[in-house]
Image (cartoon, rainbow, N blue to C red; front, side, top):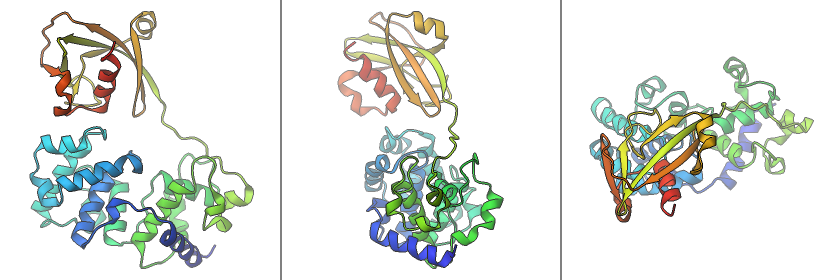
Length: 329
């Protein structure tokens, strides 16, 4: 496998097939750094198509690192509303403040320094080094890992061994276009080397892929175990006003507004005759009983939300889903 030939094929494919993504539309190196930082944080555990409108709105309202460092928590959370994993938004602001204070307003150009910033780990730091600074790093996300597993026929491995990858560095080749190269590999994984039914006829490196030669593409699943948990949500409503509480009970959606709820056992869930809904949260499958009442109640940290003013409040998608399910119940 000749790395130089492979890298040329990958870059040629990228030049002719790359998606038009808003974070690629920068006009200066400073803006490139900022766009890369924001987009990579947003893309953590979130699909590209979901991120696009959020990124466009975020950049419009918070256009640079200086504005981000000074923005109110209320405004940044409103920009993030519905995107999920809300700690990312506050970490992004903390990172901006640290960049202003410690790095003179510029992203550090060292992977070790990048990992000192809130919310930035191995993958995101490698992505920033490659995309923003054109350094020879390949961020190992699910798309890239899938390509490597198939190219080297590592389908039985739960995950790629880093030591093994170091021996296969020739796959990455040598290029002065490290930024494009990293994005190209991720793009091929997203658009061509799909988890099921990969589009091999479009792949620029299929002739170097052992899985293609063997016609064997199925990778052993390494999915996290999906925990099933049962909950009871108490919906107190009076004259179109609903009571919400600030969540300090559950690890998910910390400090955000949710309906009063508690965890219950499977037996209680099955025996209930009330409306039930199902919501998936990360690696948790939540089965929820809806108890709706108009009886007044006094709840600690209770917060009244008027149905007609719902858009004024910062609500996680989780709360909106429950709200939607009970509005006509």
